[in-house]
Length: 174
Image (cartoon, rainbow, N blue to C red; front, side, top):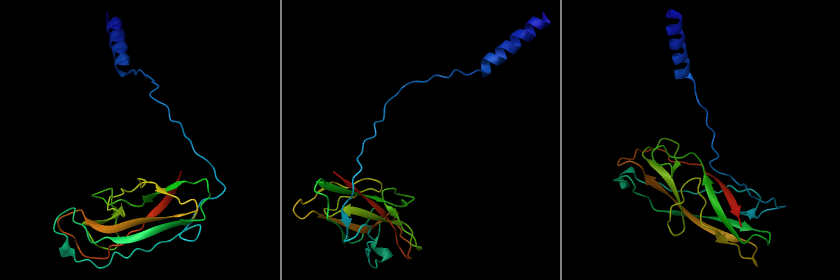
């Protein structure tokens, strides 16, 4: 009787700790792309560094989360584009703000604020999201893509200090 009870106890313990592994096919990912000989020149060269001065802004001009500074315009120019390209979009990358991950984090001491990038109509372009496509002029073999940048408060109180940011950008072509 003791052996039988021990066996039942052992069997019950093993069954409690056993796992059933189930695999299911939930979907498919199809990767597509194209390799091209060359792309457009960006701002006159194959690589570009663009400086955008957002100016000096008083911390007191931000009175609530979501307030923005005056926008500063900047342009990414594409030239010498292959004739097979019909449009281009830009995706901005960088370290996201800790409070609002659609904004670029500022470095240098200022707090409660991030950098917002938007198209020239003022529509925000969240980090890691491509802008709308800009048509490439086939006769000019290029396009000027106009954007704005501005500070945007993430808190009601903005702390003073340097408010710099760095974004990398990627051009996507059609």
